[in-house]
Length: 263
Image (cartoon, rainbow, N blue to C red; front, top):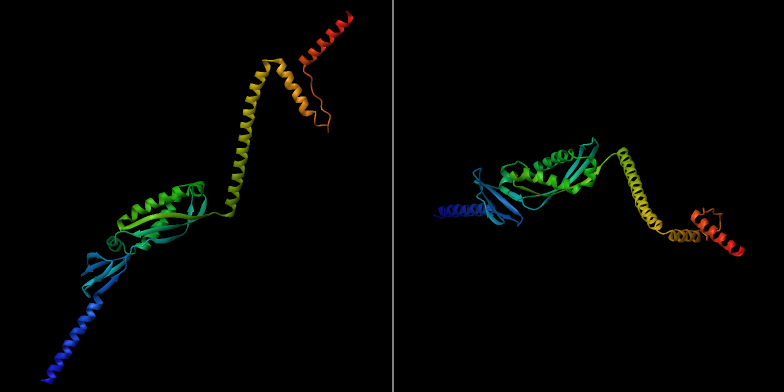
């Protein structure tokens, strides 16, 4: 009788221990930013979490998925621009999982798949633009790459939030060529600005000449003012032409004075 009771107690204790082990093994704790994709006998069942999740060992399996924003560095890519310039470009992609079911079922490794897609998209998009666009219009290129990636990863349950081009590296010879081009562009702008200034000055001089032509006295006053301005410079001899109208005026004044004396 005692042997039977001992065996019963041992068997009952083993069953209780087994149940406790199964209960402990079935408990999963998911953090706030985690979700669990649960499979029942190999088939998708549901997405659980966060908090405590119960999984039946041997029958159900769970795959954890992180919903936080992932910062992925895109390795440096060799790109040939539209104007046949070889450059190296690297970027950063910000993405997160929005649908854990698609991220686990529709793609084997969503991180690696997104990384490879970002590299190929970066090369294809930048290859359609010239070097000047890569250097001056990065914001527009970032938006174009982000929209293409987001459209293609939507079926994977991935949301591409942002893409940033970090560096566009070019060789030294191309740097010197760009510097010469920039210098020539600055010289061209300087010449254009100088020509526009000359044109505006000529227009104003024409207006001034038209105003002065209406009154000979104004022309004489302007002439005397010019003599006053240059009289302060005593370091050199200044030869200044005398207008004929002033000479005629002086000559007539002198002749009038002589005729008066003769009378």
